[in-house]
Each structure stands twice: as structure tokens, then as C-alpha cells.
Image: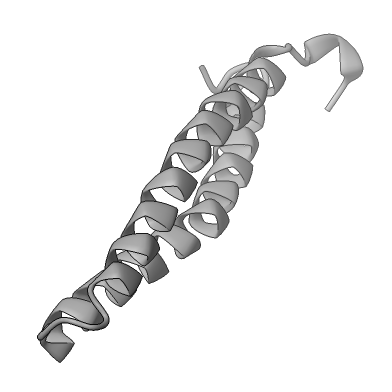
Length: 89
């Protein structure tokens, strides 16, 4: 691939995905903290194990999303880089 054939579309898209992903993960961190505080506040009361398991599954899914999103950003950048080559648009 020649440097003259490349464009900045893939880099701009990757930057925007990092920006919007950071905003999304900041909100998800707030929700995860809220769920943990909610679970800890219910400890003295008669709460079933299912409610704790549900909260743990939600928090675990929130913890896994940054890694999955980072994989998506990499794949999106690679796909856009291949599309930017001449003849594949």
C-alpha cells in the first residue's frame, strides 16, 4: 500500500469510537457503582440470592464491555483501512 493512496477516514473513525466509547464507559461505571451500592444496602434485609446473582451478572457484563469494544474498534479500523485502498470502495 502506497502512502499516497491512504486516507484519514479510518483514523478519524477510530478517534470518534474512542471518544464515544469513553463517554459510554464512564456512564457504565456510574451504573455499576450504583448497582454495587444498591446490593450492599440490601444486605441486612431478607433479599434472595437471585437478586444478588442478577446484580453480579449485570456488573460482570458491564466490566466485559470495554474489552469487547476495544476489539470492535480494532476490527473497524482494519476494515476501513482495507476499504480505503483503491478499487475496493
